[in-house]
Length: 75
Image 1 (cartoon, rainbow, N blue to C red):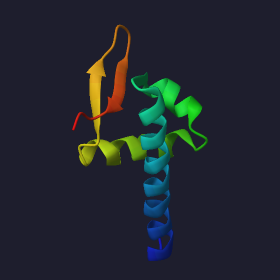
Image 2: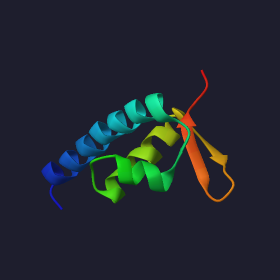
Image 3: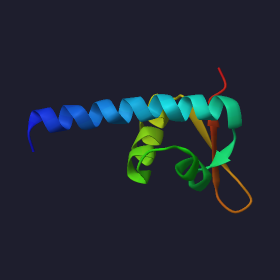
């Protein structure tokens, strides 16, 4: 895989992470399933963006009644 392709993929994850953050600021908490349906991006890219935000401490994960919920981290 070329460096150009890898760079483009990382950039795409960052862009989708911004979209996820904006969505959560208006709709949180939501399930990962709902989030992946609501964001206009491939599911794997949404999950990578969630991982990115989680790693940066920008989102919290909570146990819901049937699945995990995510929301913006408390500041």
